[in-house]
Image (tube, rainbow, N blue to C red; front, side, top):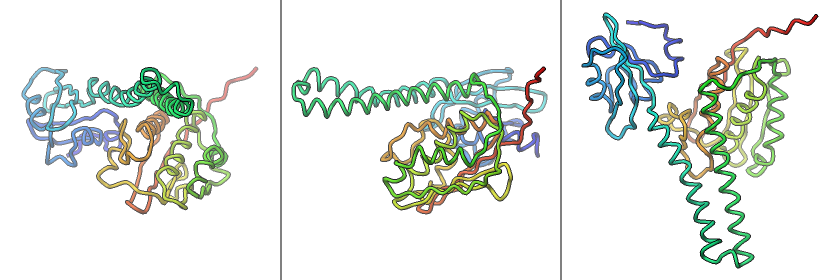
Length: 318
């Protein structure tokens, strides 16, 4: 039974689960990720909370879902004559807790370094002072970047950042990102290959889309192997799509559904905030586009980005 257009249903950022009595008959991709389930046959760790919510007959009834070792979710029950529809999203407490946890680590490091310099006398030793001030500089930069990315993600997801669409030639945009990241690539002898054709034009917000391209290339460099390669090319499947492929570490199949979530980092040895891909996806969503990923551990990863065609209305001049 299909109640919704599958493409539209799965494009929704909010999780939607549709029940007939207590049987799950439709669920979108966002809900599967939130509920940690793969199909309609198993309600997963939140099954008890979901079944309890279905017992209510109050439209727009809101309840927090809890599951075994699962983070709390906010659920709103909508009722019509035949179906009960549950709208699922991350709870405010979960978002706040994640942000607090990530901010606590650099703040703790800053406090420890300041205490070492101020209270324990390390500031009296020139060599020690230089060392600890250098570490303090690194931690403050890390904290600043984390806060800026949190604010950016919040604004983007709230739709409070307007987009200015224009024609964007992708090849020179990729080359500009290569130039910015060439030193980072050279450290591990990563080859950067730009196979985007000169006539590949997208309609996008130049500033925001530059962030997408640069972030994806930087990730491809960071998670690559020594003497590896990063290649950007036009997709063979769609004229409005392009790919970025690396020869790096790869992503385990179980982790792929979660890579665009905030603070998801599967290799803690490689520095990062865990927000980069969440911001990338949010920007692409704002453009009405789509990003997908395929990967194999030990062989590499390929991101595919689709941006729909759009007409630009030019201002009328007298």
